[in-house]
Length: 161
Image (cartoon, rainbow, N blue to C red; front, side):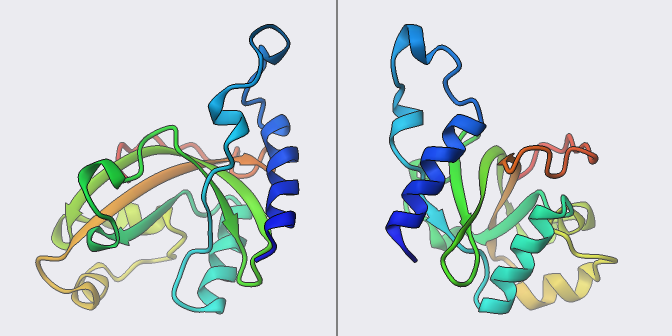
């Protein structure tokens, strides 16, 4: 991943996302000046690129992570958090804003969340079996701020992450 490319993306994205419309009056804010974390989703290059494709097509607005990937409760994502989504080559592709977060057991995750991740016709029993009983997950919802208009044709109001 090229830090220069990510920094250039952030410079452009924070303006395009309108993170500080009152900048001329109030000056820069922390949210707009400190670059958010940049990451790619998935365990393989194919997974990472497929997720980017789904996000950019407006077909994915959720993701799932193992609770064990995070430390203390205060390290969990929070609504309003920003992130730069990278493809498998480390190129920044989208600026995401977290809209909701929920910690749940595998058995509490419904097909609707999997559909929001871009899974077509999810096989919920197989998905649950693949994650293991009793595993805690972090369910995150997000919206795409940059590029603008991505996913705007779909409306979701499910309070999970």
